[in-house]
Length: 308
Image 1 (tube, rainbow, N blue to C red):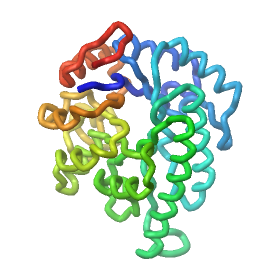
Image 2 (cartoon, rainbow, N blue to C red):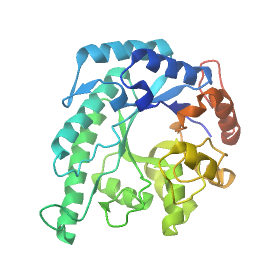
Image 3 (tube, helix red, strand yellow):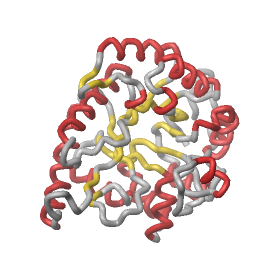
Image 4 (tube, rainbow, N blue to C red):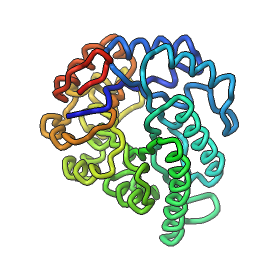
Protein backbone atom coordinates (compact mmCIF):
# COMPACT_ATOMS: atom_id res chain seq x y z
CA UNK A 1 0.00 0.00 0.00
CA UNK A 2 1.43 3.39 -1.03
CA UNK A 3 -0.23 6.13 0.97
CA UNK A 4 0.19 9.90 1.08
CA UNK A 5 0.58 9.56 4.82
CA UNK A 6 -0.68 8.23 8.12
CA UNK A 7 -2.68 10.51 10.39
CA UNK A 8 -4.76 10.85 13.54
CA UNK A 9 -7.69 13.21 13.95
CA UNK A 10 -7.75 15.97 16.56
CA UNK A 11 -10.53 16.47 19.11
CA UNK A 12 -12.62 19.60 18.58
CA UNK A 13 -14.22 19.68 22.04
CA UNK A 14 -10.89 19.42 23.82
CA UNK A 15 -9.22 22.10 21.66
CA UNK A 16 -12.23 24.43 21.92
CA UNK A 17 -10.41 27.38 20.34
CA UNK A 18 -7.35 27.06 22.62
CA UNK A 19 -4.15 27.31 20.56
CA UNK A 20 -1.99 25.87 23.34
CA UNK A 21 -4.14 22.72 23.47
CA UNK A 22 -4.13 22.56 19.66
CA UNK A 23 -0.34 22.65 19.67
CA UNK A 24 -0.20 19.92 22.31
CA UNK A 25 -2.61 17.72 20.34
CA UNK A 26 -0.57 18.13 17.17
CA UNK A 27 2.61 17.35 19.10
CA UNK A 28 1.11 14.08 20.36
CA UNK A 29 0.21 13.12 16.79
CA UNK A 30 3.63 14.07 15.42
CA UNK A 31 5.40 12.22 18.27
CA UNK A 32 3.47 9.09 17.29
CA UNK A 33 5.29 9.18 13.96
CA UNK A 34 2.34 10.41 11.92
CA UNK A 35 2.66 12.72 8.93
CA UNK A 36 -0.90 14.14 9.01
CA UNK A 37 -3.58 15.35 11.39
CA UNK A 38 -7.24 16.03 10.73
CA UNK A 39 -8.45 19.39 11.99
CA UNK A 40 -12.07 19.80 13.07
CA UNK A 41 -13.18 23.21 11.82
CA UNK A 42 -15.54 24.09 14.66
CA UNK A 43 -12.82 23.50 17.26
CA UNK A 44 -10.51 26.17 15.80
CA UNK A 45 -12.70 29.32 15.95
CA UNK A 46 -11.49 30.41 12.52
CA UNK A 47 -15.00 30.76 11.03
CA UNK A 48 -17.41 33.32 12.47
CA UNK A 49 -20.73 34.15 10.80
CA UNK A 50 -19.82 32.07 7.76
CA UNK A 51 -16.58 33.98 7.15
CA UNK A 52 -12.93 33.40 7.99
CA UNK A 53 -11.70 35.57 10.85
CA UNK A 54 -8.25 36.73 9.64
CA UNK A 55 -6.56 37.17 13.03
CA UNK A 56 -7.66 33.70 14.16
CA UNK A 57 -6.54 32.17 10.87
CA UNK A 58 -3.07 33.70 11.29
CA UNK A 59 -2.74 32.46 14.88
CA UNK A 60 -3.91 28.95 14.05
CA UNK A 61 -1.76 28.81 10.93
CA UNK A 62 1.30 29.64 13.04
CA UNK A 63 0.53 26.71 15.35
CA UNK A 64 0.04 24.39 12.39
CA UNK A 65 3.34 25.39 10.77
CA UNK A 66 5.26 24.69 13.97
CA UNK A 67 3.87 21.14 14.12
CA UNK A 68 5.55 20.03 10.89
CA UNK A 69 2.42 18.05 10.00
CA UNK A 70 0.19 18.15 6.94
CA UNK A 71 -3.58 18.31 7.21
CA UNK A 72 -7.06 17.33 6.22
CA UNK A 73 -10.08 19.26 7.47
CA UNK A 74 -13.36 17.97 8.84
CA UNK A 75 -16.24 20.42 8.48
CA UNK A 76 -18.53 20.94 11.52
CA UNK A 77 -20.44 17.79 12.38
CA UNK A 78 -23.79 19.61 12.35
CA UNK A 79 -23.23 21.20 8.94
CA UNK A 80 -26.08 20.02 6.70
CA UNK A 81 -26.79 21.45 3.25
CA UNK A 82 -30.39 20.14 3.39
CA UNK A 83 -31.22 21.96 6.63
CA UNK A 84 -34.44 23.94 6.02
CA UNK A 85 -33.37 26.86 8.22
CA UNK A 86 -29.59 26.94 8.01
CA UNK A 87 -28.89 25.47 4.57
CA UNK A 88 -27.60 28.76 3.14
CA UNK A 89 -25.53 29.72 6.22
CA UNK A 90 -24.10 26.19 6.24
CA UNK A 91 -23.12 26.63 2.59
CA UNK A 92 -21.18 29.76 3.53
CA UNK A 93 -19.43 27.85 6.32
CA UNK A 94 -18.56 25.12 3.80
CA UNK A 95 -17.08 27.79 1.51
CA UNK A 96 -15.09 29.26 4.39
CA UNK A 97 -13.80 25.77 5.21
CA UNK A 98 -12.59 25.37 1.63
CA UNK A 99 -10.86 28.75 1.80
CA UNK A 100 -9.19 27.72 5.07
CA UNK A 101 -8.05 24.49 3.43
CA UNK A 102 -6.48 26.55 0.65
CA UNK A 103 -4.76 28.81 3.19
CA UNK A 104 -3.11 25.98 5.14
CA UNK A 105 -2.52 23.67 2.16
CA UNK A 106 -4.91 20.95 3.34
CA UNK A 107 -5.39 18.14 0.86
CA UNK A 108 -8.97 17.08 1.53
CA UNK A 109 -12.10 18.48 3.20
CA UNK A 110 -14.54 16.02 4.81
CA UNK A 111 -18.30 16.61 4.85
CA UNK A 112 -20.86 14.53 6.75
CA UNK A 113 -23.48 13.89 4.09
CA UNK A 114 -26.76 15.83 4.03
CA UNK A 115 -30.06 14.64 5.52
CA UNK A 116 -33.62 15.77 6.18
CA UNK A 117 -36.37 14.37 8.35
CA UNK A 118 -39.46 13.45 6.27
CA UNK A 119 -41.76 15.33 8.63
CA UNK A 120 -41.47 19.06 9.16
CA UNK A 121 -43.49 21.45 11.30
CA UNK A 122 -45.39 22.55 8.23
CA UNK A 123 -45.81 19.57 5.94
CA UNK A 124 -44.81 16.07 5.02
CA UNK A 125 -42.04 15.69 2.44
CA UNK A 126 -43.23 13.42 -0.38
CA UNK A 127 -41.14 11.49 -2.92
CA UNK A 128 -41.07 14.39 -5.36
CA UNK A 129 -39.91 16.77 -2.63
CA UNK A 130 -37.22 14.30 -1.62
CA UNK A 131 -35.89 14.06 -5.17
CA UNK A 132 -35.81 17.86 -5.39
CA UNK A 133 -33.82 18.02 -2.14
CA UNK A 134 -31.30 15.50 -3.45
CA UNK A 135 -30.98 17.36 -6.76
CA UNK A 136 -30.46 20.66 -4.97
CA UNK A 137 -27.84 19.07 -2.73
CA UNK A 138 -25.94 17.76 -5.78
CA UNK A 139 -26.05 21.18 -7.39
CA UNK A 140 -24.70 22.80 -4.23
CA UNK A 141 -21.92 20.22 -3.87
CA UNK A 142 -21.04 20.71 -7.54
CA UNK A 143 -20.63 24.46 -7.02
CA UNK A 144 -18.56 23.85 -3.88
CA UNK A 145 -16.50 21.24 -5.72
CA UNK A 146 -15.71 23.71 -8.48
CA UNK A 147 -14.55 26.20 -5.86
CA UNK A 148 -12.39 23.53 -4.20
CA UNK A 149 -10.88 22.45 -7.53
CA UNK A 150 -9.43 25.92 -8.07
CA UNK A 151 -7.27 25.30 -4.97
CA UNK A 152 -6.51 21.66 -5.74
CA UNK A 153 -8.60 20.47 -2.78
CA UNK A 154 -10.66 17.26 -2.75
CA UNK A 155 -14.05 16.97 -1.04
CA UNK A 156 -14.82 13.63 0.58
CA UNK A 157 -18.49 13.02 1.47
CA UNK A 158 -18.62 10.72 4.51
CA UNK A 159 -20.96 7.81 5.17
CA UNK A 160 -22.81 8.20 8.45
CA UNK A 161 -23.60 5.80 11.27
CA UNK A 162 -27.29 6.68 11.48
CA UNK A 163 -29.80 3.92 12.01
CA UNK A 164 -32.94 6.00 11.35
CA UNK A 165 -34.38 4.60 8.09
CA UNK A 166 -36.92 7.42 7.76
CA UNK A 167 -34.37 10.20 7.14
CA UNK A 168 -34.07 11.49 3.59
CA UNK A 169 -30.36 11.04 2.92
CA UNK A 170 -27.89 9.50 0.51
CA UNK A 171 -25.32 9.27 3.31
CA UNK A 172 -26.13 6.07 5.11
CA UNK A 173 -25.00 3.52 2.54
CA UNK A 174 -21.69 4.04 0.73
CA UNK A 175 -23.17 2.74 -2.52
CA UNK A 176 -25.78 5.53 -2.36
CA UNK A 177 -23.08 8.16 -1.87
CA UNK A 178 -21.36 6.74 -4.95
CA UNK A 179 -24.54 7.31 -6.95
CA UNK A 180 -24.83 10.85 -5.57
CA UNK A 181 -21.26 11.99 -6.23
CA UNK A 182 -21.12 10.22 -9.61
CA UNK A 183 -23.89 12.54 -10.80
CA UNK A 184 -21.91 15.58 -9.63
CA UNK A 185 -19.34 14.68 -12.29
CA UNK A 186 -16.31 16.33 -10.71
CA UNK A 187 -13.04 14.46 -10.24
CA UNK A 188 -12.34 16.17 -6.91
CA UNK A 189 -15.70 15.34 -5.27
CA UNK A 190 -15.76 11.80 -3.95
CA UNK A 191 -16.11 9.79 -0.77
CA UNK A 192 -14.60 9.63 2.69
CA UNK A 193 -15.14 6.02 3.74
CA UNK A 194 -15.66 5.69 7.48
CA UNK A 195 -14.95 2.06 8.35
CA UNK A 196 -16.42 2.25 11.84
CA UNK A 197 -19.68 3.71 10.58
CA UNK A 198 -19.89 1.10 7.83
CA UNK A 199 -19.36 -1.68 10.38
CA UNK A 200 -22.42 -0.49 12.31
CA UNK A 201 -24.69 0.13 9.32
CA UNK A 202 -23.72 -3.17 7.69
CA UNK A 203 -24.87 -4.91 10.86
CA UNK A 204 -28.05 -2.83 11.01
CA UNK A 205 -29.13 -3.35 7.39
CA UNK A 206 -27.48 -6.61 6.38
CA UNK A 207 -25.10 -5.09 3.85
CA UNK A 208 -21.91 -6.86 2.84
CA UNK A 209 -19.04 -4.80 4.27
CA UNK A 210 -16.53 -5.83 1.60
CA UNK A 211 -18.97 -5.24 -1.27
CA UNK A 212 -19.67 -1.71 -0.04
CA UNK A 213 -15.92 -1.07 0.08
CA UNK A 214 -15.45 -2.34 -3.47
CA UNK A 215 -18.22 -0.06 -4.73
CA UNK A 216 -16.56 2.99 -3.18
CA UNK A 217 -13.01 2.42 -4.44
CA UNK A 218 -13.25 4.34 -7.77
CA UNK A 219 -14.54 7.42 -5.91
CA UNK A 220 -12.44 7.18 -2.75
CA UNK A 221 -10.75 10.42 -1.63
CA UNK A 222 -10.12 9.80 2.07
CA UNK A 223 -10.68 7.28 4.86
CA UNK A 224 -11.57 7.38 8.54
CA UNK A 225 -10.15 4.24 10.12
CA UNK A 226 -11.45 3.16 13.52
CA UNK A 227 -12.97 0.05 15.04
CA UNK A 228 -15.98 -1.08 17.06
CA UNK A 229 -17.99 -4.23 17.77
CA UNK A 230 -21.01 -3.41 15.56
CA UNK A 231 -23.27 -3.34 18.62
CA UNK A 232 -26.31 -1.24 17.71
CA UNK A 233 -26.78 0.29 21.12
CA UNK A 234 -25.10 3.09 23.01
CA UNK A 235 -25.85 5.31 25.97
CA UNK A 236 -23.69 8.23 24.89
CA UNK A 237 -21.75 7.88 28.16
CA UNK A 238 -18.33 6.65 27.02
CA UNK A 239 -17.32 5.28 30.42
CA UNK A 240 -20.32 2.95 30.17
CA UNK A 241 -20.20 2.20 26.44
CA UNK A 242 -16.46 1.45 26.36
CA UNK A 243 -16.36 -1.60 28.68
CA UNK A 244 -19.59 -2.97 27.17
CA UNK A 245 -18.37 -2.43 23.59
CA UNK A 246 -21.46 -0.43 22.61
CA UNK A 247 -21.89 1.71 19.51
CA UNK A 248 -19.48 4.01 17.68
CA UNK A 249 -16.46 3.75 19.97
CA UNK A 250 -13.66 5.08 17.71
CA UNK A 251 -11.27 2.37 18.80
CA UNK A 252 -7.84 1.72 17.26
CA UNK A 253 -7.68 -0.70 14.36
CA UNK A 254 -7.73 -4.25 15.72
CA UNK A 255 -9.42 -3.42 19.03
CA UNK A 256 -12.92 -4.20 17.72
CA UNK A 257 -14.37 -6.79 15.36
CA UNK A 258 -13.69 -5.35 11.88
CA UNK A 259 -11.91 -8.05 9.85
CA UNK A 260 -9.00 -5.79 8.82
CA UNK A 261 -6.82 -8.57 7.28
CA UNK A 262 -9.67 -9.38 4.90
CA UNK A 263 -10.62 -5.76 4.12
CA UNK A 264 -7.26 -4.01 3.75
CA UNK A 265 -6.12 -5.85 0.57
CA UNK A 266 -9.04 -4.19 -1.22
CA UNK A 267 -7.28 -0.84 -0.66
CA UNK A 268 -3.91 -1.82 -2.14
CA UNK A 269 -4.15 0.97 -4.75
CA UNK A 270 -5.42 3.69 -2.40
CA UNK A 271 -2.88 6.53 -2.37
CA UNK A 272 -4.57 9.05 -0.07
CA UNK A 273 -4.17 9.72 3.65
CA UNK A 274 -4.91 6.89 6.08
CA UNK A 275 -6.62 8.97 8.76
CA UNK A 276 -7.39 7.30 12.08
CA UNK A 277 -10.25 8.71 14.18
CA UNK A 278 -9.34 7.53 17.66
CA UNK A 279 -11.05 8.41 20.96
CA UNK A 280 -8.73 11.03 22.45
CA UNK A 281 -8.68 9.48 25.91
CA UNK A 282 -6.27 7.00 24.27
CA UNK A 283 -3.74 9.71 23.30
CA UNK A 284 -1.03 8.24 25.52
CA UNK A 285 -1.18 5.14 23.31
CA UNK A 286 -0.89 7.01 19.99
CA UNK A 287 2.69 5.77 19.29
CA UNK A 288 1.60 2.17 19.88
CA UNK A 289 -1.60 2.68 17.85
CA UNK A 290 0.27 4.19 14.92
CA UNK A 291 2.88 1.43 14.98
CA UNK A 292 0.17 -1.25 15.00
CA UNK A 293 -1.56 0.47 12.08
CA UNK A 294 1.68 0.50 10.10
CA UNK A 295 1.94 -3.23 10.71
CA UNK A 296 -1.60 -3.88 9.50
CA UNK A 297 -1.06 -1.66 6.48
CA UNK A 298 2.38 -3.14 5.74
CA UNK A 299 4.00 0.29 5.81
CA UNK A 300 7.35 1.63 6.84
CA UNK A 301 8.28 5.15 7.86
CA UNK A 302 10.89 7.27 6.14
CA UNK A 303 12.88 10.11 7.67
CA UNK A 304 10.24 12.71 6.75
CA UNK A 305 7.52 10.85 8.60
CA UNK A 306 5.83 9.69 5.39
CA UNK A 307 4.61 6.13 5.23
CA UNK A 308 5.12 3.96 2.15
